[in-house]
Image (cartoon, rainbow, N blue to C red; front, side, top):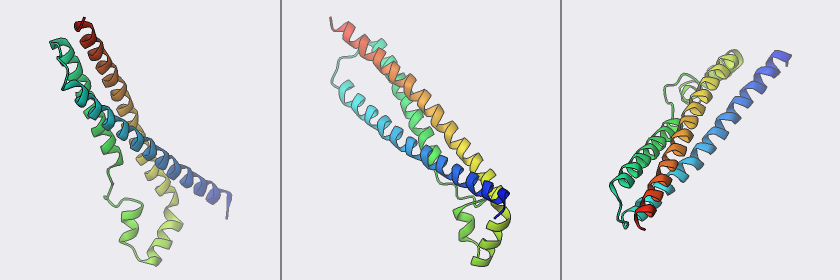
Length: 148
């Protein structure tokens, strides 16, 4: 195995590992966002909320739902068949061997683009989650302040 082949194999493994890490982070954040949405709904429905608290809290919930949407988009299966599993499912064993032997660099490039897209969705979802959480905290403070 040449140095180029070793480097391509290492790059391929690195990109696949990054995709797995991003998917794990996405799953954890999606569970967190779901728990925050459920908890907020449970607490807020029993409280007398002022108009500013309601508006602020509703905006926070909208941002959290948007974050959940981005997270789901990030883990949505890509069945276009350009690379990876869907492509392999359409090929014979001989064609798979030939494709792997000649297209490892193309697969690394395709997987890298996929990893960047997933990471971008995750980053945006984290930003929305932080902003939505901050708005929920402000709504809680507004509610606590009006209870005095």
